[in-house]
Structures are given as C-alpha cells and as structure tokens.
Length: 383
Image (tube, rainbow, N blue to C red; front, side, top):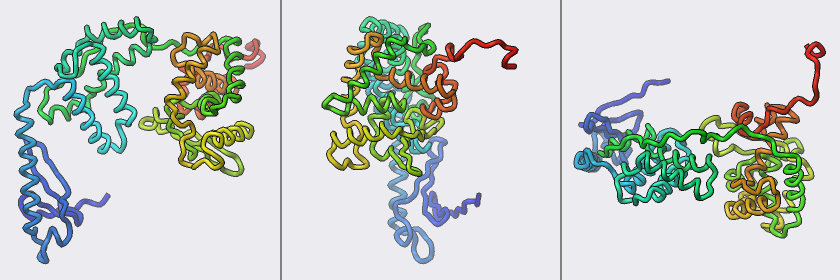
C-alpha cells in the first residue's frame, strides 16, 4: 500500500494526498477532519492557506474546544434513560459509518425497542437515571412478561436485550461525551434457551399443508405470498417484509430467489440463490398481478404492508392448525418445517444453502436430527 504524503501548511492545517485536512489534539485524543474548502479556495497560488481556510480552521477548533468543555461539565454525570437512548442512536450511526454497516440497522432498532420496553416494563420512566434498570427490576419484568403470556424465549430476549445499549463499543462513545456509563447487569435466569427443534407431528404437518392449499382461494393474495415465501423458501418474516420484485432473477432459463438474509448480513454475509419451481413461480406472478395490477414494478414490495399481513397470518394459522394454537410466532414454524424437510430429504448442505444459516445453527434450531435414518441396517452391511 502506498504511503500517504502529508505536508504541514500551517498550525493544524495539513495537505494529505492532495486534500486539505485539519488536525487538533483534544484531551489527548487526535481529532481530524477534511476541510470544506479545497483547491483554489483553500490555497493561494503559492500553496499557502487562504484567509477563508484559516477562518474555517479557527471555527472548527473553537467548536472542538466547546465539545471538550461540555463533556468536562458533564464529567461524572450518569445519563437519564432518555439521554442514553439518544446518545446510543447517535453513537451507533457513527460506529455504523466507521465499520461499513456494523451494527446493522436491525440491531440498532431492536436495541432501542428493547430498551424502551424495559424502561416501561420496569416502571421507572425515561427521565430516571439509567442505573434504575437494576437486575432485580429486570427480573420482575421478566416474570411479568411470562405472566402476560410471552413465551419464555421471547421474554428473555426482551429482558436481556436491554444490555445491548451498553455494548463495549458504545461505552467508548459515552465516555467521550462525558457520561459515566457501565454495562447494565441482567438477572440470572436459567433455562431460557429454546430446546432443540422437534419435528411437528404428522397431523400438524398435514393440517399445515391443507391450510396452505386453501390459502390460494383467499381474495387477498398477500396472505398466500407471505406464507409461500416462508414455506417454499424458508425466508424469515423480516426478509419477506423487505423483499421486492428484484429478489427474483433469471439465469439460463431458470428463475431464482436471490437475496441476502438481514440477520446474517453483518456476520457471515451469506447470499441465498434458490431455484423456484415452475408451478410456484407461475402462481407468484399471478398473485403479484392480483395485488399490483397487470405489470407490477420490479422494486415493488412482494407483500405490501407485510407486518400487518403477518400479524393476521399468525392468527389465521393458529386458528386453523390445532398443533400450532399455542405458538406465538406460528408463521415462523413454516420456515422451520421447510428447513427440516430439506435437511431430512437432501442433507445439511442444501438446507444451509436454502436458509442462509450455518449447519451448526440449523441442526439445533431448524432440523430434527434425531430421526434421519430411513431404515434399520446392520453395521457389517455398510462398513
């Protein structure tokens, strides 16, 4: 990699690879910013900073010194829940820009959502210091969620999710802003991890297939499309909501579903490229025309108002299939059933390619690996 060429033009003003930058040390930390003025506006014919550039530099220095003074005035101050929430969002945007997309937008939104819910559920108010979110209060919040009918796994997600607002990367931003913030302590709760996936009974699987077959006759084709994207292609509901017509691509006469799952975009970065059965593709096109007219736009959502559709779809599935009557996220079971079937029939690699998850994850959460042998055999016959 070529070495960057830097030249000092004046105090705090540098020329770096042809661009003018400002530099300043504030409380032992180097601050650097590219000047707004460049070219002839920044340098005269002899290569010296113009008056306008020096004025911009002085204004920038004064602003940074004010930043330092404001932080110093807050030194030792514990933020309120409202202040911490605002500071988290601001910090997350900076971190996201610095890292090229991490933390992901979904992570940011979930962190803020869980924090708001916890503040409300712990009955402390947004203007209370964030330290009021104690482990004891969070434990009581967890129990309240269970009493309200939340599944144990979901209740734990809501309770433990509050800790994300004090992630290690975020603490550095809070300290720079002059606040004292420590990692939120969460209660010790046992048995909150979901058990291994167990394949639904034959009766339940048959009932799901009958329900899905009848869904095509519903006047609102969004329900069929939402169910299809999960049952046929094992998409997460969040990915279905974000999906547009551009997710469908053609290659060598075959139509594929091509997308990058949001949940793994910032980790594995896996892309799904899955062939679509001709009969299913024909129905998808027909359903989209029924929703959007004769020629749906390529960038149009596959399932308009998708979140509302999934709320209704969950209810419809619980009412139609007795085996899913008590399952809060009934539609998500369609994804699990699809992955399990692919795993059982064609193996782990194809199931991983379909779901976008690694084999370790899907063999715990999405596939019943305890019942894979098609028939009993003797060891000496296969060794």
